[in-house]
Amino acid sequence: MLAEVMYGGRVTDDYDKRLLCTYMNEWFNEKILHHSFEFYSGYKLPLCNSLKQCLDGIKRIPDDDCPMVFGLHANANITYQINTANDILDALIRVPPQDSSKSGGETKESVVSRMAKEMLDKLPAEYVLHEVRRALQEMGPLEPINIFLRLEIDRMNKVICTVRSDLIDLQLAIDGTIIMNDALRDALEAIFQARVPELWAKVSWESSTLGFWFTELMERDQQFRRWCFKGRPSTFWISGLFNPTGFLTAMRQEVTRAHQGWALDSVSQRNKVTSYRNPSEVSESPNEGVYIYGLHLEGASWDLKAGCLRESTPKILYEPLPLLHVYAINSTSGKNPDVYECPVYKKATRTDSTYITSIDLKSECNPNHWILRGVALLSDIK
Image (tube, rainbow, N blue to C red; front, top):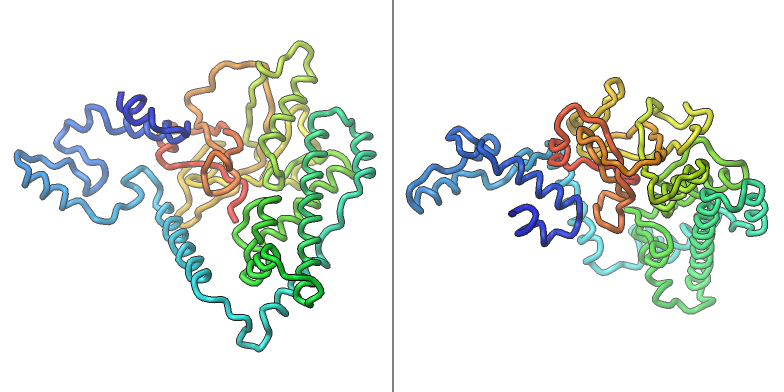
């Protein structure tokens, strides 16, 4: 009643509700009736007969809670400290007025102009659409994966065009050839502070710094060009896709079409963690499904020999997951209750907008342990 109705009825995220129910199952049982029960070391239930005794018991509880009290790994405290420090530093950077010159005498405008020229020199060329259509025609224009590729290339082309246009206009505005409008002024300030301009982020993806974002732009472009003009790759970098959920749906459609009589509604996604650590170890695609890489475990690590989850290595926040074979089967039956259903997110910010899918990971202990650990897979940890 508490987990599903009183509190669960207010929770909108399925994984938040799963965590809430797990807390209830862990603590609301006969164990708490024993005098020796502790939630964690130093967190005893106060044995009292009066209000004063109860308050004294509460005061004895430590003021600063360690992550283990909530079932998290000790590494969670490192993540908290990093996030707090980053928030403070971001606030300090944004609060003071921006000085137009640096200590070396170089002005803000000259710095941004030089950076814009460097980015323009490295920026990939726009895609020639008739060449893309011809390449897709040879691979099969009606194949679900190829339709998905065309949509990804269209979005990539928009990003390249937007960045090129903004950088050229920014250079002209700095030179005084055109008027510096609000959008260009925002881009000027963002590039000077090594942030991604707001307009670029709207048409692309989030990133912590401009350097990471621009490097990812070139890496994404390389994957799309190889895929389009050199044929379907044997492995896919899922972090470099605009719509990874759509990619997995296209994979399901592809498998469904390969089997006569299968319907997409009755086909379920399944996965297997392989022993391949690097894409270079894979020479050919699987018979069905796809190999994907670029996912990192947060809250746990992967035991390659045992093929299951294990505790995080101290002071290592993210550990890469070996290549994942994702495929589909003609079944809608429930999953094995002994495996941990691990959510996959684009970013460390775990929201509906960054959610991709869920992956089943083998566990030698009760999956509730990993739920309390907050274990998830992230496609981008920068």
